[in-house]
Amino acid sequence: PRAFRGLGRNRGQKTITCTPRQLESLIRLAEALAPMRFSTTVDLKDVKEATRLHKVATQQAATDPRTGRIDVGMITTGQSQEERLAARLRLPRHTGDR
Picture 1 (cartoon, rainbow, N blue to C red):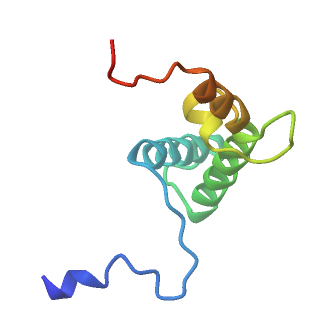
Picture 2 (tube, one colour; picture 1 turned 180 degrees about the vertical axis):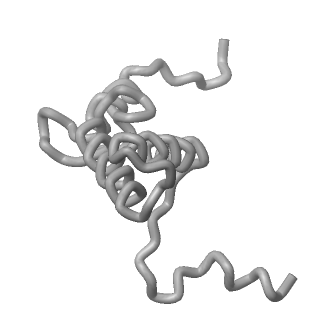
């Protein structure tokens, strides 16, 4: 168990986090890029291009058009942080009394 404690630490290196679904999409992108180069193997350049495409797509999808700020919550909810907060404030509060 002790040997596994430090495995999650980045040890000063730049780390990129992603969900399993995002990782699978990166793999599929890299695998699709190789045949476009008439290659039967995925090379590092395919992985780098897949990562770049994913980053650009994520950045575009997560940018609030009104503020120009990146809001990753827009990807999962379809609403900006401002809209999510406004919706929460409009919700009737349940006090437990009927």
